[in-house]
Amino acid sequence: MLGRRIGEPSNFKGTAYIASEFKRLGLRPAGDNGTYFQDLPYGPMGFDVASLNLVAGGAVLATKTDWVPVAPTAMNGIGLKADLSNVPTVFAGRWGDTTAALDPALVRGKVAVFLATPAAAGLTQAGGGGGGAGRGGPVLRCDSVADKFGAAAAAKVEAAARADSVAGRGGRGGRGGAGGTRDNRALRSGAVAILFVALDSAPRTAVNAALNSRMGMQLTSAVGNGVPAAAISSSAAVKLFGKPIDQLSVGATGQPITARWQYDWKMSATPARNVIAILPGTDPSRAAEYVLVGAHNDHVGVNAAAVDHDSLRAVNMVTRKQGSNDPACRPTDAQQHEIDALIAHARSIRPPRRDSIMNGADDDGSGTVVLLEIAERFASEKPARSIIFVSHEGEESGLLGSKWFTDHPTIPLASVVAAHNMDMLGKGRADQVMYGGPGSVQTLGSRRLSREFGDIIDSVNTARSEKMTIDKSWDVSANPMNRFCRSDQVNYVHHNVPVTYFSTGYAEDYHQPTDEPQYIEYDHAARLARFIHDVMWAVSERKDKPAIAGPDPSYPVCR
Ligand SMILES: [Zn+2]
Image (spheres, rainbow, N blue to C red):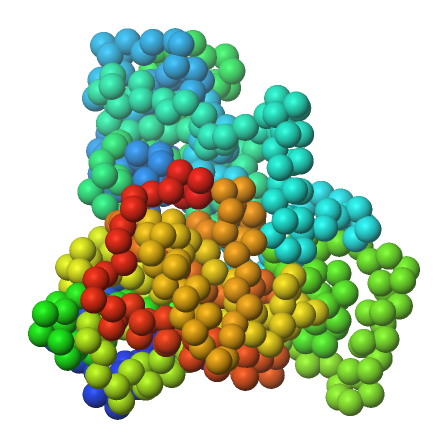
């Protein structure tokens, strides 16, 4: 399935399968236009490279060597397109120096040229690409990496880190790397475009990546309504002003420029989509109310580099118990022996197998198949309230599908009496997570908006013969590893829908190419599926919906 990344054919295929299962089970479509699908406005965007053009003082500048256009973002307020014909330029000083006022008489109707950092022109990232091993800097020895195994340990490490950063007065960099205080002077003084003299010191990878298209949500009208901007080299600046930029004073006029560029978004050919179905409730007085269950259908695609599966897993089993939640580290001698032994054992069975596909069997293949199993079970029952099944798109790209669904619900959100979000239900052995075991489940948020919802979950568990061991240690105000704010439950909380997040926890294959089906604890996942079904059944059958007590201030606030 090639990692089921949002907007890609593999994800599209996966969502088609989910819809076909909903159909097979006889569930009612609850997406848009009578279908199971709710498309997200998501797709490729970038500059139309063929039509890029910048002429400075009669000289045609070469893209990447002499100039690149700056992509508009929600943050930078830069315009989508430039169409300039012989517009005079004026030197406007240093970008970000908002203490120096710009005289509109000098700037109006002209192209303002600023000396700027690469960051101001968005030229800092070393062109994305998945992988994610080293982030620069020395690799720590594993025995000097803080132990974040389990919620309590993670919360303790994070509290210490916060205390350190307060003591160290903010530490490195600070926020707002992309320009700090927003510089609106050019816009306010009536400039029609901006040139940043910033290209020379920009990382080559960032300059090369500037013209690549990327995938994202459709630009909103709030994006791109400023003036267009481009980054140029110092030698291009000399072409404009006839001398080096550091010899200019503010207000110096330069040669005119003629330019054209355009930034466009279009819908993916294989649309990103939520898959939504309903099983109508059988009690006429409660059928207009819904019990919601969700899981996400996307994962993170394919890595740029392939590595040997068994070697990677050996390293992660010994040194990164929570997968990419833990930093890569240099093993101690004892750990290296352990790793070597695991690899030697693997080699005795099979040759190296290089792999770059992020399969996401646990994340969230497990939640997705449990969603379908729960749907199959309900399809043969007659719940009083309606059940709504939501397969969320784009969780990995910023909770996009749950945000889209809760912003554009296909049923009234106020009629959702409780939501159950399932992300990663396929691990949870005692050696994989703190408080793990055959019946373990971590829950977060169950009493956040509705204490009663939490009470229902506990009482269902007490009444069942197949008991689960509910671990609430992650459900604390310290919000260890930002756990509560990291999955789709957040968007329901924002809309005042009581929601509980169910998971068996982070394990060694988290966001690794080794997150494959052979490492899933199927019996455990099935047990959890029966439990979540029973909780949903209890919610659907009880006379009153779980009472909303309002946000409990002791829980983490997300954003
Ligand atoms: Zn996930």
